[in-house]
Length: 394
Image 1: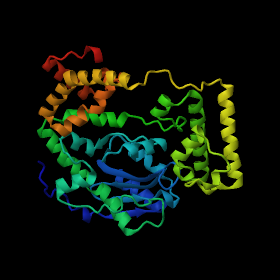
Image 2 (image 1 turned 90 degrees about the vertical axis):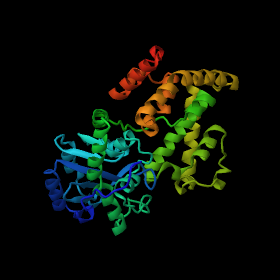
Image 3 (image 1 turned 60 degrees about the vertical axis):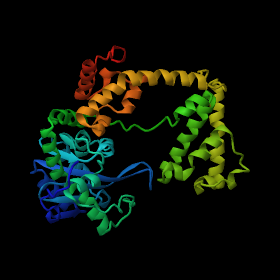
Image 4 (image 1 turned 180 degrees about the horizontal axis):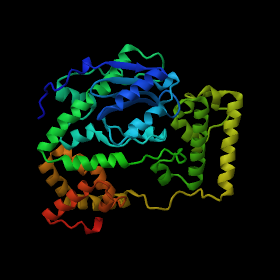
């Protein structure tokens, strides 16, 4: 549908600077501050090789120069934040959700954003990853072997730096081409709405305190829920101290067994997948003392040993599922089909996804609560055109 063609202004000729000194950082900021638009991307580790959400590399490029800023080189990267927050400069990224979460956690709030992945989805591209879009638009195949490397480690190799540079070198010409396609389909107002939403959404990165899953709330008693969540919190504290992902300390299955069914201290030395800090005599004693403390606290709070009284029988769930399926088939599927006929199947999945429909049917979301103005109006206008009453879901 979207033929590959070469649109690039030879990005391989754009100079790339690996920034590791304060003087280089100053030069980087000075040069990029003169641009009308810059592309950016981050390489990070999120509980894969170390604890937490850690910035490993920041890539930024104008039409004239590309910079790879290394925060591991004792640089104060906060000097870059005003550049990203400058609303007079357009910042182009590709699917930057996690990047923005990390920047917000660092107290940097980029303004005037454009997401090329969002453009591609609205334009009905089926494959919207960065590599897929570069291949479809420019006929260039990028090497993917660096996707899963440990970006925490130093020094960075030439292949890593080249991979990181490619993440931003193609974004500005990609944005220009996709914007032309969007203009031809009268989608620019939709893109403006999405970009405004992206630029004004603030991501809250408060420390996690509730580790329970939906199944825990359904099938565990309040007493066991308290002990299990307390043990997950304890595991997280140890992980932070050791600077290791929590699953390196103790895997989830063992954590659940320990909290719900119990494991004796005699059995503990034979349990696999436990970090040495919890296998040591001191660590083992502290762990089991903490479990005893959690049980004592749960008892003192008079938490019930009984599971939830909500009806979780198959019959109850089947009846509720049948009701939702009927509403979906008679109300929401026709709306989705009409949107797909106008914008394409892949664009429809972005505009009015099945996940959004499920949220509406299960009462977690009202149509008026959909934050995107154009999506909300498109859904309501389509329903009106089809003679569908949405009053019970608004």
